[in-house]
Image (cartoon, rainbow, N blue to C red):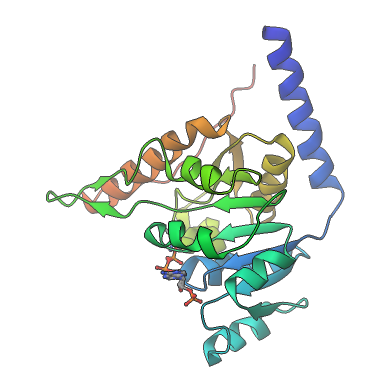
Length: 235
Ligand SMILES: NC(=O)c1ccc[n+]([C@@H]2O[C@H](COP(=O)([O-])OP(=O)(O)OC[C@H]3O[C@@H](n4cnc5c(N)ncnc54)[C@H](OP(=O)(O)O)[C@@H]3O)[C@@H](O)[C@H]2O)c1
């Protein structure tokens, strides 16, 4: 069992090293043009990827402006059209929009689906709660069973993503998913934008990462904000 685990870890590291060392240009559909899409779209484009924004109204002047600022062959179209053209689909939309979106987005079979969604459920005491059980990410995997869902980018705000140094130092991005290659690809995006990916295992641990957002957000509400940094143990 231990040997199997070790072989799995070594394979993960090799795949990640491969993605990091050769710069592979992917087509990324950024579904949603809110704060997160506007932050990560240009950042992914700067890494050499082609970004296609998927919007309910792609002809809005501010989206055309975003496309110009993103550069590197970026474009904007409808949400399902963007997803259809992409290898990687990022669901940068509010969690409560995702179920409906999954019925209109078309087939995501074989694609990497990045799930950055958070519940944004606030109790009467002002503190956050989970939206669903077992987790947003596992529901997305159920709605798109042949896709490769990776949970990532949900435990910090977009300001930290585009400028990690504004957080005062290194920031970790926990990642979970069931497909090693998909996780390695997402890890290379995380690393590319200057953050530190940390693989926390299969998708069944997504609720842990979603819980990390809950305590991260609650700490801000309570006036004692922090950011995650996982310091690797040397031996
Ligand atoms: N903002 C952050 O710092 C941050 C950080 C970590 C994780 N997240 C998570 O990332 C996701 C996106 O965050 P955000 O702040 O960018 O969200 P947002 O501003 O509330 O919405 C993002 C975009 O989603 C699209 N959208 C909105 N309602 C929709 C609907 N009913 N159906 C389909 N598309 C819809 C819109 O784009 P169009 O008008 O172009 O269609 C909108 O601009 C959320 O789940 C959030 O929890 C956000």
